[in-house]
Image (cartoon, rainbow, N blue to C red; front, top):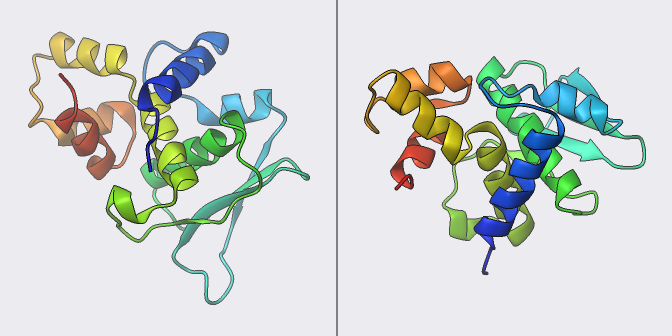
Length: 161
């Protein structure tokens, strides 16, 4: 499986530019609404408690787990927007279970990449590292600034050049 992260990054940057977003926290709800999507927080049904979110293209609804933390909800919405902007059909659900990239399907990995690039674009991350004199090991502080899960920021900083 080969994912073109550069093309995905470019697509995420196009979205940020279109919505005139240049600083964290990225307003993914505004983007979703701008694309005609409604966000609904729901209690996941029995047997699907580990589901973080999914979307319905026909109804133009992104469903997210109501009991998730705000950073998790932010990432889930961005992930589902990844499916939308990358042209994926209604796809399976985003599980919270930690998996290595190789264990995700190509579409899920691409949507995760889009979410990361949308919420934590390199130009923005570097700006805040410099502005606050932070290092890559300050992922907790950076996660707070960007409103994202710590694990997402840690992953982003690990790949920052």
